[in-house]
Image (cartoon, rainbow, N blue to C red; front, side):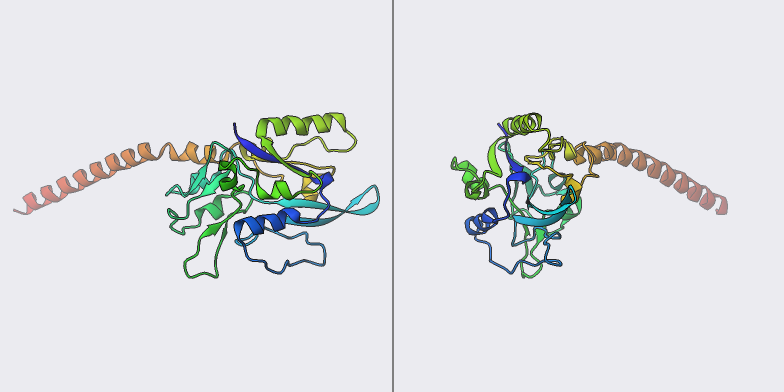
Length: 259
């Protein structure tokens, strides 16, 4: 059964234990955390920060409050990065994570262009760069363990389990606490569904989440075009062959007239 994460923003205290655990397990360098006007609103993942906790100053009932949102790869059910990669360096595993096979990557960076969440990042400062992103600790999953970030969370804001069960849990929380949560599980339908799900008490767009994405898997759009490629190729071949034969006959006829 496909695994996933449920991130409850109302429970997150911004401790960044998940961020530190991700770095420790994946042996990522510790770099200074940038900020914008002290709010950290603009934080994004990069090649050396696969998990980041964004700090957001919001206004609720006329009062300014803080909300903290963990950001990482969404591990889409129908990954655009996998669809765009012509060497199949990105793979959606049956367990849920979207993993990257660096030995197959040719550095085209189509995955970066295709991802609706701008997650894959390039190692621009290396002589032999790779594309990097969260892999939901796929190596840990294969050993029967949870991702490092979920085990480090002290408040239960980030939990791991079967995606279907997490989705049911999220809907139950909304149903049982209608005054606490907005009626939206982010990731249930976005881009065809994702393995990472979110709950919040404020609209997701106020936390920097994309809410203008389609509910249809992005590869379905590309396939609706690409499926016609063989027919187009055959059609153009026939047209070009006919034009060639017509031109050749005209040339042959002109040469006969000259003789």
